[in-house]
Image 1 (cartoon, rainbow, N blue to C red):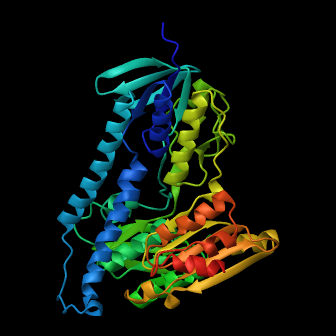
Image 2 (image 1 turned 120 degrees about the vertical axis):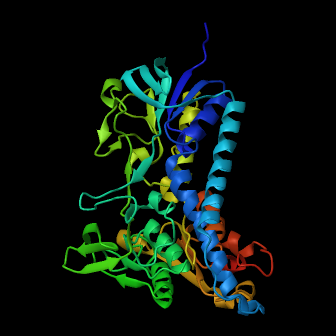
Image 3 (image 1 turned 90 degrees about the vertical axis):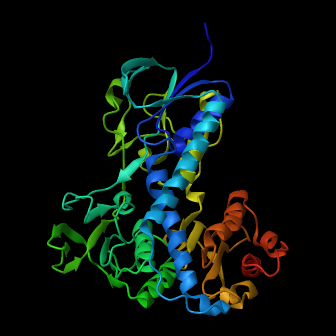
Length: 452
């Protein structure tokens, strides 16, 4: 009789994949069940496709701005929707097949279907071939999230759409109305405007990205307004419906916006219905699965990780939590994941990224900090690129010199912020960054300058 731990993973996204890989590498007998796409629906049907569209839209904009590099005017450029879709699908397929190959090489049993708990150590697997029972010693719930659809939105998948439905439109929207100005909303505003759309962006707050760095958000707003984006502040949507030839979005304060399409970008909801949680003794916390700092649910042998727990919904956080669970299944005691140290980025133009403690948080806590800011207009590498705008902001402890957080606005911000993220994670001081000899000329030099 086998003494290997039987580990059931429900969900094949970043959390489930990382957990399965870690546990299988350590000798566990792992079965992973995924209902939609191996690699995760949020990851491969939303996150990565949006970045593929950003890259394509930015490439078109670069060609249009070729005069900066001495190129002649290329004339009108029309996006090829079919080729954009082909690129998106091929990227997602490559990532999915790569994960499948890795997990199979580790001996993970992959099942396409749905799993539902029927007891503390039992589940039923439903596939095309029917149902069968699975027994397990440990289990992980990693079923992710889906776009939130408010009751007032009449989604039809053609004119009133979610982010996942935006990728299959037959043509770029001409007059899209984007509802919500968080990361998803501003990224689609960037994409649609780059592809020639006349965008109206609704934010229920006084600015875009209301929970993030105010100066970074202001830089993005300035760019949007220059492009002709109509920004409606304090506009909380109350209805979105299809009308003849387009859509109509009404706000709670009585404003009505007409457009060709309405894109809902009002957040994500954890997916944990129809899992048989009660049968397994797993408690919920509102919409999400309740967990402790080490991802344990109310049933101590069952874990949950990633978006389904309702925390910071980032692939990086989900993968780290999944890897943590994989190690716990093997009997290790790793430290909990510190999600508040996760680096984040918004893929727009300018690109925005941040990590760790922010100015507004320090002010709310009454914590004295030192903030230094260096504009990219003083950086030689930035100056040889079109529109060398943006900045690096470094936040450190006022009493010492420990780096606590930072913000980057400008080209490759999502890559550059990794340097600051490493400093935050390792508890490094400003002096370490200041004395690091960066490549010259490089955008990274501005981080060293900000640290001096």
